[in-house]
Length: 77
Image 1: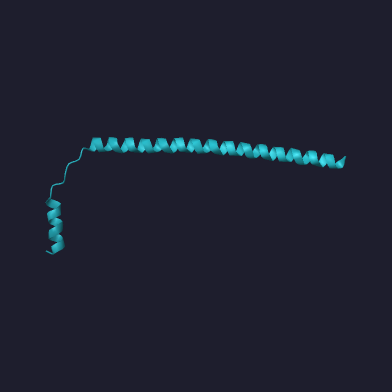
Image 2 (image 1 turned 45 degrees about the horizontal axis):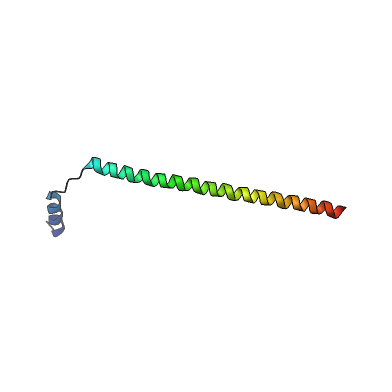
């Protein structure tokens, strides 16, 4: 046997520390639900910001277009 095989054999025979699977699962689920909640709220907030910016942009475009039409009508007179 080589040195690596002996090392692997001793590692295989060592006892590992037992972990509480239910507690670990609850911890992972709570952490992931918190992360998901933060992402959902952030996405909703960013979406509303886009709606506001698009609304301002549409209003500005509409006002510019009305101004241009009004200006053209005044030039024709």
